[in-house]
Image (cartoon, rainbow, N blue to C red; front, top):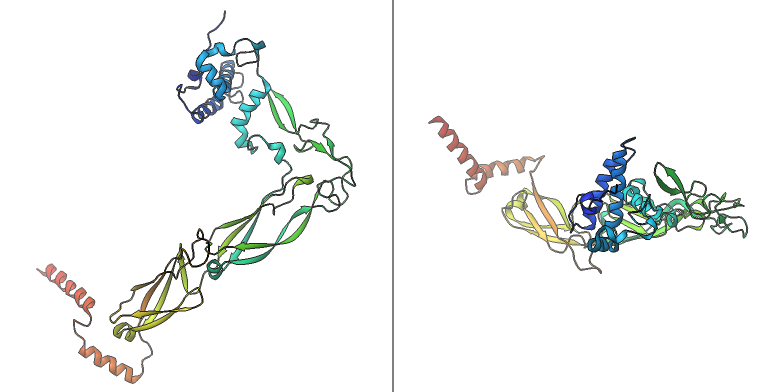
Length: 383
């Protein structure tokens, strides 16, 4: 007795206007739930898994989905049973499903695995620089231990002029198929590592790898405005590829040494500058250094208190996004700290004692105001 097929949208539990991402998420969730490995011996789960795969194979493809939306299951009837309604699975379509479901967990990154099988690894280099380097930029020489193409075989891995031949295991495809339960799984060939070729007479220098270990010297151009944690990519300067494959990339990660005077916040710089008690009281000037190698004069008004900030526009860090010097600079913030005098001589002490006798509420308004509030609070408790 023939059974009526369920609507594919109903099988995946999505609406007919669902997006491709919604359909993929629904498929993954159901495929994980009904996968045979999670339900050993459960024929019902196996049938549900087949039904889910069949629905997804149609709805993930724009052309198949359009045909299904217009004609329903009739769009795939006939044709020798090779469509979604036929007996068993077409290998190509199930391989697509397997890649979508497990590719990101297996680290294959989808298709194109064979083309990247012999690509060299990316490398990381940690480089410490100064705040002055961040301000001006610099060109740095670094020595990187890595693998480079073998000169003896020109990176091919084969001795002399010999050429690699097709792998006898995978017949040059780079992948082999294995039957597991009711479906077939495709994986990288263990003999050639997914390259599809093997070397009959390996190079004696590199052992057939096509690369040898060596330290090389590189130049890294550091632009003005870089900050802690920024990275610079040197394309093709990573590990050499296997048997003539493309080289990986080198990533230079920057760390910045703490500065003796300045603290950085984005494009802005902060500096704490001590001033004498007399300068704070009477006013004056202080000269502060800047990262461009010059000095800036800051005017201190009389009566300046500890913590007062002064802003020097354009004396901060350059913007990494701006090209050319002189554009897109942050500011330098000077915070003054009033220093209490120590190790007073006899005359200095006499002068301060005389000043203390002449001091009144007007000369120390903050202190006077604070203690006035304290008296009011104590008086309130007494009442």
